[in-house]
Length: 251
Image (cartoon, rainbow, N blue to C red):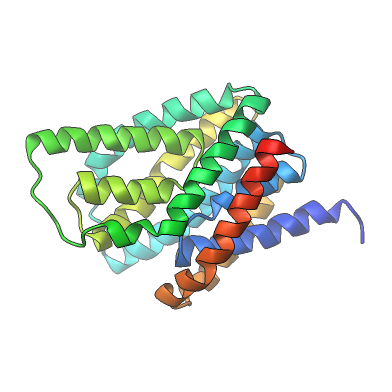
């Protein structure tokens, strides 16, 4: 086999797995980001490159939700502003970091995000709407800005953080939060792509290959039983994430 094909095959397979994981459990970027780094893309460029696949997957999911008529677009129009502000700031910081610094940071972030995946955050969130006082709304918008900053900075595991912010600070139901999470991630990703692109932090060839694999994986995952899929994939994901974090931090 031509060795030049190995990165493309690895990204296609990794993207497929990540897309499936994002549908049945969440946290697919915890695989794709280390994978891009391992095949030789500089860490900050890997961070920009994976955003193309995230956008492709987000567009597919958002289109499906829109056709089903379940997206509260008026709510999205209000919530997206603090997310945009945070995401642009985070992407600017990430795109200007030294690769060695970012690699170390993402190693620790991967460990923490892997822990969030392991404990299954959804089990700790109340599945009911709560009263939104003025003070709580202020905290909610601050929380969205912080999560947006993290999404622009690192992406990996941001879906779980959006879910926490939307339910705990925003008072949304778990079902409503899941829909908003998908749309908000899709909404800030183009801004992050612009920032990383301007700073020449996107490998477009690998980005498109990853996007194809991840879109196929997301399509396959949609047909799986969500509860069973999450139960099956979470232990594997945690092992992979911890191994990747150790590799990033110590080797």
